[in-house]
Length: 368
Ligand SMILES: Nc1ncnc2c1ncn2[C@@H]1O[C@H](COP(=O)(O)OP(=O)(O)OP(=O)(O)O)[C@@H](O)[C@H]1O
Image 1 (cartoon, rainbow, N blue to C red):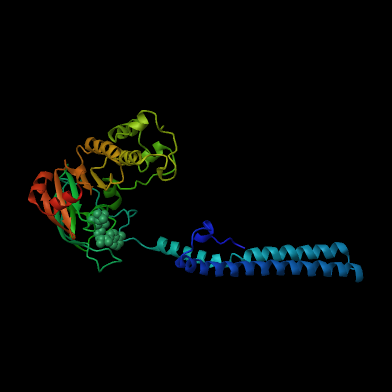
Image 2: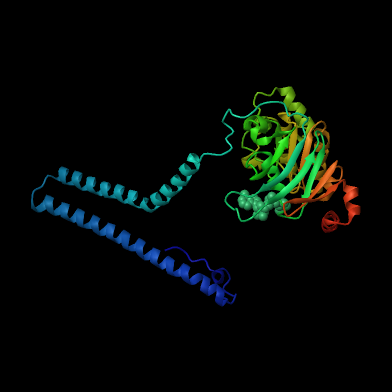
């Protein structure tokens, strides 16, 4: 019988609440049923064994059956029944396994509209390197009732450090996803160096973009392999340069070695160390565009300062688009776009926007 763990069992002095009793009642009924069915099951098996051995003994003693053959037959039947019963207990799981497998195959068979493996699309230079969102309308295909971007317009020049800010749900992360071409806009166009993003080769374009998100995707392999992920042919000197640019001081001081495995999802590293590893990985490919989506939001102020410092040095010569809630992290941006309800409602430098006394000033007041 399974033990019943109810709050009142933990501390007998505690007077049980009525709601706790109600919570435990279905569990108690379930445990009783489970115990009873297990007990009956075991009794039935033992009764069958008893009958089998009794019959075998009778066959040998009274009807002169060959003992060797009787025992052989008996054990064949016993082990056969045990095997069948152990298979039968998995029948309910096979139904859910079948359902899960169908889901996995459905996903595998799904043809993506934006296929990075296709050799189609232009592979060229990025022109003047500007990014222009031109009357972009967008909604997530499985949620058409929520119009996320509504006639979004903004331009980013090559080499600029730009920040996207705004209240939660205003569409900032969606802009970052569109830039990586996870989706295409339903209306308007995103132009890179004057060319429609849809006309560029997907794999080539994604190589031009480095992305650091809030929770970097790290693997349980060595620190070096994690940094080289996406560019395994990088030389040692290139890896060192990227690490230096990303301020990975913990590897230069020897606190973590290049060969150390960093655990599942990088659990052996601190938040700041993980983030700087992700920045080094992004920089190693020398992307022309860096996308930072809340890259420092989960960090304490010391780690954040280190990551910020790393980004300041690493962003030179690159176009950087940062999504941030902590406005202190974007003070040095060349331009800040304030988004509200899928549109840009204000644009300017930090000081210009603060003095406008609009949405940005409200956000700044909240983040104090
Ligand atoms: N994968 C998705 N599928 C469907 N709807 C989504 C998806 N991701 C975001 N949305 C919706 O799109 C809208 C904009 O979300 P988005 O994440 O771009 O906003 P945000 O400004 O980045 O918000 P936050 O600051 O909270 O991260 C929200 O209404 C959100 O519910």
